[in-house]
Length: 106
Image 1 (cartoon, rainbow, N blue to C red):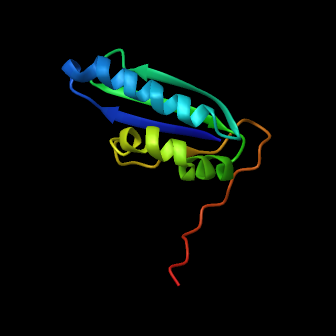
Image 2 (tube, rainbow, N blue to C red):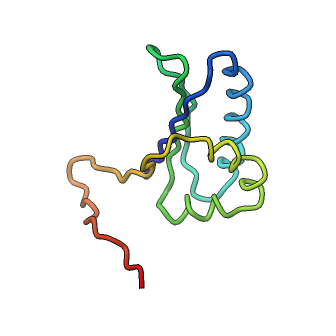
C-alpha cells in the first residue's frame, strides 16, 4: 500500500521542515512492514512537500502510527499534512481492487 502525505510549508521554513520530515521517515522506516519512502518538494510550487511511504499492508501502517517512537518523532510533523485521504491501494493491472463501503457508526 502507498501513503501520500502532502504539506504546505512557507519557503523560508523549508530546510528545517526537511530535517523534521527526514526524522519522521526514519521513525516510520524502523517499523515492521515498512517497504520504502521518499521525501519530495514540488518542482512548480516550492511550498508544497510530500512524504510518500510504501507498506506491506494497511495493518502495518496503522500499527506503525501507534508505535511509541513514531508518536514521539513523527506524529507532530505528520499532523501538519494537508487534510485529505492519504492511503492508497495498489491498482496495477491484475490486482483485485478494494470495494469502498462506508464504515458503521454503531
